[in-house]
Image 1: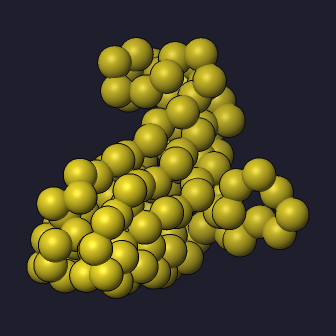
Image 2: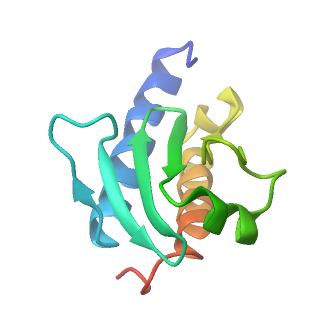
Length: 116
């Protein structure tokens, strides 16, 4: 949980940047669904919710995702593949941009085609 006004502002910026990345990468917005976005990946559909300091992800095809990502990096039963960031990432916009870059790399490696 972000505690200061600066962290909250940088967290909102992070959330907006990750949402833009997902849309540029072909994600669709899901209305009235459990997850905010769905994006097709090499491992099947990835469901995504974006928060100011973390990203909640879940693969629909759990066995396929576990075979590539591994049982340690994700939940092998539910398909959850979450990305949480410490408050220190949100002290400055520069450090928040590092969190955005991390998400772009982590999700980007499994995209069907590179984002613009």
